[in-house]
Length: 299
Image 1 (cartoon, rainbow, N blue to C red):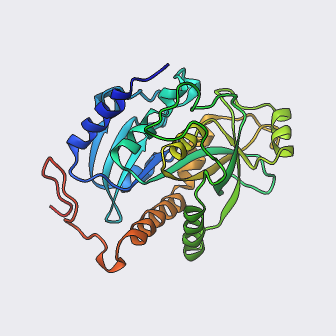
Image 2: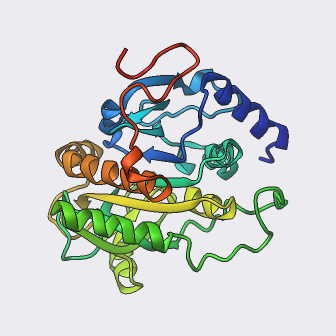
């Protein structure tokens, strides 16, 4: 599906009309991790159904809302619910929001997901920052006519997951005493879970975790000039590692169990990014971010 260029403009203009300022950072919340949205203060909530040309989230545990507000007094955008290729969407629809965020002028794209542990040293509830990925889907979100206004025909992916953001995440986790692994994420189409033999093959090829999201958005984010970081919550061990079948309810339950350290780490990253850009002495306080509907933090 080829998306008309004017759609990106129309969607971005609709979102801009709801806000006075566009945050530098957007967070995409994966399965079971939408609880972070509850930490955003003075939220402006826009249902995906209200946004022109936006797809609709169909997965249980994905609220389907774009939220703008303050996370520890720092402005953020958050997608509570993403779009997956396995839902039947074209790959250009899956990555559509990322192009819109680029149009809005967002600088940092923080992707999160629930993933299966392939590395035998991982345990459910662990966090893993993605340092690289392997795309086993057979699909590139850049296939088709190149969108020159966003990026080049053949973009380099050597530093897809931004080294500076990776450094900040590791510094934040160290300061907070949160253990975080660093690893390679394998992307498959889904929606079926992988077979035990597929997981053995992925481990042999260097994968530490496996999932059905994130990679298309990361590639398009990189192509569009955004700084990209991604964090996986290891919600289950992948097929064949433990003697029990895989269950999406378990994925959501473990993500919720690990949510406090996840929220703490992502919040610390957002604050650190703000401080990198601004004088730390001028941290936003209550009442500093205003929205068109008149809401001001603290009122």
